[in-house]
Length: 305
Length: 282
Image (cartoon, rainbow over all chains, first blue to last red; front, side, top):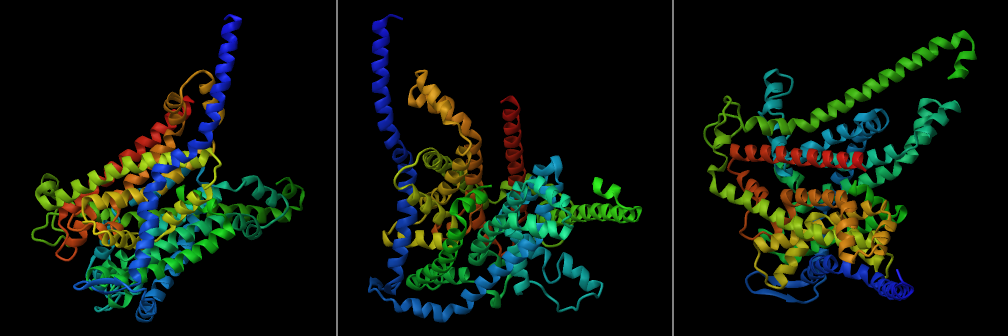
C-alpha cells in the first residue's frame, strides 16, 4: 500500500468514524420507533380512550356523550365492591398457595436436580402447551359432581351424595392455582439456582444446622424470586374470569366477569371501562410500589426466564 | 466433616442419623416433585384420553371405548376448522410482526443508553404487568371511540401489541452477555451496518430472538381474554371452544388440543437441541 493510499484510507476512516458516531446517537431511536409507535397507538392511546369512555354518559341506543361524569366510578365501586374484594382475596390466596406448592419443588430442582435440572423444568412447563381453556375445561370435567373423582368417592360412600366441588370458591382457587403455578415455579427456581452453593457449605462448616442454613442463607437469597412470582401470579389470577366462569358459580363471580358482562351483555361501556380502570389502578399502584422496592429490571428479567 | 471424625465416638450415630435424614429429605422432596408433575399432567391426560373416546352424541363425558374416528374426522366441523385456521394465521402474522419490532426495541435497550430509555422501559413493564382484562377493554374502548370494525384485523393488532414487550424483554436479556467488540471488529474490517447486523449481531442474538418468537406464538395462539373483547364476529380456536362449552365440547377439540400439544413439544425440543448444538460448536 502506498503512502497516498494510506493517508486517504485514514481520512476516510475518520469520516467514517464521525458518521458512525452520529449514527450511534440516532440508532436507538430508529430501533425503538416502529415498536414504540405500535405500543403508543395500541397500548398508551387505548388507556386514554378507556379513561375518556369511562367519563361519558348515555346508552347504546341514543349514544354516549362526554360529560366528565365522575360519579360512574363511585357507582361501580359501590355496586361491585364485593366482586372487587373477592378478586383481590382470591389473587392473594392463589399467590400464597402457589408459593407453598412451588417452593419445595423449585428448591429440589435447584439443589438436587443435578444434570437433569432443565429436564425437570421442561417437564413442568410441558402441560402449558395445552390451551388454557382446554386445561380449565378438563378440570371442570374432573371435578364434576358425578365425574371421575367425585363419582367414585360417592360410590364408595366417602362423601355424601350432594357433595360438590364445582361452583365453590375452592374450585375457582384450585383452577387458578393450577393455571398460574409455573409463573411462580420459574422465578423461584431462577432465584434458588443463582444461590452460590459454597455459601451453604460455608454455613455448614460454621456449624449452622439445617434450619439455620435454610432460614439465614437460602430463604433470604430467594426472596427476589418470591417477589417476582407473586407479581406474575397475583395480577393475572385476580383479573382472570375464565376459571370463575368454567369452575365457579354465582357466588364466585370475579371482577373480570363483571367487566365482560358490562361490556357485552349490558352494553354499559362507561361502567365497564370505569371498572377496568379501577382494577388497573389498584393493581398498578401495588405493582409500582412493589417494583420500586425491588427494581423493575429484576422482575422483568425473572418474568422472561 | 473432619470435625465430626475427631469428636467422641458418641456423636457417630448422630452423624449417621443426620445423613439418613438428609437422604430421606432429598427423597421426600423428589417424590413431592413427581407428585406435582402428576397433578400438572392430570388434566392433559384427560384431554388426550377423551380424544380417543368412542362417544356418540354431543357430550364427551363418559368413557365408551377406544376409537380413532376423531383423528380421522378432525376437520369434520367446518366452523371449528375455520377457527383453528384463524388462530394459526393470526399467531403466525402476530409472531412475525411482533418479533421484528420487539427485537429492534430489545436491541436498542440492550445496546444503547439514550434519552427516553426509562420511558420505553416503563411502557414495556406496564404492558407486561397490566391485567389482560384491562388491556382487552382498553383496546375495545379505542376501537369503539374511533368506530373501528372488530374482526380479524383488530385481533392481529391486539396480539402484536401484547407480544412486543415479551419479545423485547427476552431479546434484551440476551443482549446482556453480548460482546459489542465483535460488531466493532466487523465494522473495522469494512462490513457495512447491514452486513454486520446480518452476519454478526443477528446470529449471536438468534437464540433470544427464537425464544421471543416462540413465546409470542404461544401467547397469541392461546389468548382468550384480550381476543374475546376485540374479535367481533371472527372466531379463533379458544373463542370457538368457549362458545361450545354451553352445548358440549366435541372430541375434535381434544384431538386438536393434543395435536397442538405434540407440535409444541416438538418445537421446544428442536429449539433446545439447536441451542445445545450451537453451544457445543462454539
